[in-house]
Each structure stands twice: as structure tokens, then as C-alpha cells.
Length: 87
Image (tube, rainbow, N blue to C red; front, side):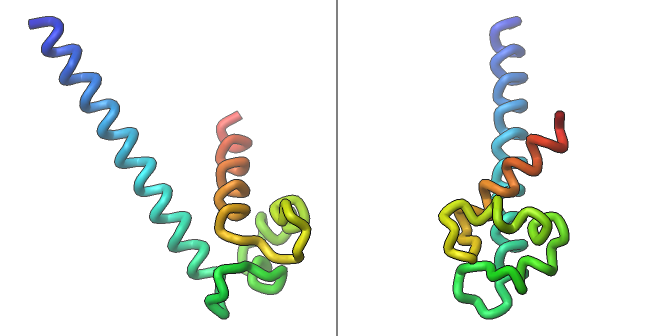
């Protein structure tokens, strides 16, 4: 009985975590799409200006130095931002 309750509790926690992760992924994609005004799947410095935090660290977020932030770089930016907020 205790094992069953523990398993159910673990399942509930895991499911909640996965749902939150999926929600963050969807939010990330939606924000990227909203910022990508010309829909070229890249954010220019002008497009990044619509997100003050991203604009302020654009050069850092642009890890390959091509003067644009792609979706992967944007997701890394969000991950780093979230880590700093939780410190």
C-alpha cells in the first residue's frame, strides 16, 4: 500500500514537471515567433529590441557572432535567464 501511494505521488510530481516543461517550451516558441517580425527564424538586433533583457545582452546571446540570434541561441538565453532568476 505504501509503495502504491509512493508510486502515485512520484507519477504526479513527474507529470507536473513534464507539463510545466512543455508549457515553457511552447511559451519559448511563441515568444520567439512574436519577436521574429520578418519570420526568417532569426532575431536581428532590431527585433530583439522588443525584449529589453535580450536586447541588453544580444552580443552574449549571439553565441556564433553572426549578428542574429537563432532559436537555439534564444532558448539558451532563456535557460540562462531562468537560472539567474532562481539563484
